Structures are given as C-alpha cells and as structure tokens.
Length: 352
Image (tube, rainbow, N blue to C red; front, side, top):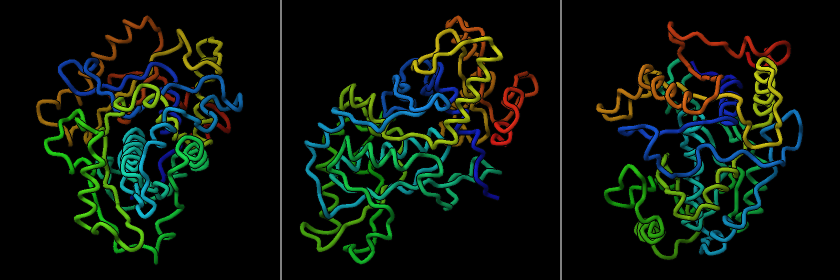
C-alpha cells in the first residue's frame, strides 16, 4: 500500500539540518573523503526568514554565480528536459532534482517542472513504484520558479509535459546523463565541462542536426553524479537554495525546534544560520534497504553499531550534550525522547 508520507519526515529533515548534520560517503573512515557534489544540506539562510513561526523560510534565490553560468550557456529553444524519475528518501529526491537541473543547464534545455516518485510506505526498499506526485508534494514550486527567473532567466519552465503535446518532434527520448561518459568513477563526472559536447553528439544521432519541432529528453534518475564544485564555491553554496521545502513542514520543524529548545532551557536566535551549543543532529540509516545498492564490503556501514560508534565519536568531539536522532526502525537498546513527547496539542495532530 502506498500512502502520503507523514509531514514529520520532512520536518525532521529540516530540524536536524539546522544543527550539525553529517553526510558521509562510505569509505574507510566515513567522516573523511566526503564527495563535493550538489549540496544535500546547503547552509541555512542568513537573516531573511519571513516569519518567526518559520525559521526555515527564505527569499527566492538571486545568485550572481548561477546567473553567470546560465549567461554563458548556449540555450536550445527546441530542447526540453523532464525530471520525473526522482526516487528514494528526502535527501535522495532533492539531490536527484538538483542533478537533473544542472544537466539541463549544461544542455541548454528548458525544463518541465520536476515530479516525485512515491515509494511504498510499507516497504522502503520499493522506491520505483511508478506513482508520481507533483513538485508541491515535498517542495515549494513558487520558490523554485521565482528563483530560476532571478538566477537563470534563460531557462524556460513548463508546468506539465502535456503542455508540449502536439509540439514534440517525436516521443520523448530517455537518457541517463552519466552514460555519455566512459568509466565514470564513484566521485562523479571527471570532466563535466565536456558533457555538453557529448550530449550534442548523442542528440544528433537520435534526431539529426535540424529536427522539426520540440525534442523532449526524459532524464533518468541521476544521483551524486555532477561534481558541483567544478562550478566554483559560490555556485555550489547557492545551487541547493533553488529548492525550498513546503511551508507546512517548515512550520512544523520550527515548532519542533522551539519545543526542543524549551525542554533544554535554551534560548535560540532563529535569525542565525547556526544555533551554537544546542544539539547534535544524527540520522541513523539502518533500514534493510540501505545496503541494497552498496558493495558487500561496505555493508558494515549500514549497521546500527557502526553508525552509532562514529556518531558517538563526533558527538563527544563536538562537546554538545544533547543529540537529536532520526531513526526509522527503533532498536530495543536505544532509549530516546520522540517527537510525540516533545510536541503537544495541534502540532502533535499535524505530526500524526
């Protein structure tokens, strides 16, 4: 059975990312050698939150770094990309959409507003269900549109693929973007600046040099592939802010954060991007599907004991006395205070 995921999942994602959030690549030591891809967790907005009830709100992105890249792009008005195959958890979907957007910029393509594939809520390993929701299911479409208008005005955005019916040269063509390069390492494209040349050659093979009508390319799910720091640090730090989570999840995350602060007798300044000496945020990813895409030698990192050891080490090093943990499957030897003990009243009803 597939059902809408609880608002709490996105709220927890936001609440954790307001503190020390560690995203680690599976390696000999998970806390070293982190890959510099598209920001999974961009820096929190500065002091531009629009409401004291929503610490995670921020203005549409107006980035000179992104605008410069877009200004140097040779746009193809007859080319449209779709980003309709984003699957997995919150971070996976967010990164997949950002990868797709970056490849669309590289190709000089217009974009159909991304959609999200729901996973089976009864079995988190079943992520390719074919059930799709619009962008507003998780993200803020208006923020996305306005941020692109300001930061990448050369990119046209269509509401739906149906808007292109009757204009298309032929049926959409599927493309896994990294498949155009040979021997792509786990760290992503080695020469992303050469991808446009490879793409143009691939496109000519499929539609010729001068196709009549719009060419639609269905970009397949690409994850942790585009080395975003190749565009420079300012671009990398800004690009993730093209996406913003929907308002109700941000407000619930703010309430959770304030409730945690109240329980800890902590006075947070929500206008600041980092709350010092508050709590350490950790996501214990131990569900059975976590290991499915990993090589056997890395399965040890999907175990509770391994993750807990590294997180405990970092918690001690941070000097923080409180830990906020997100864990989907509660272990019998782990005692925590859940969100249901932190929230009350209408907020608890929203959580449910």
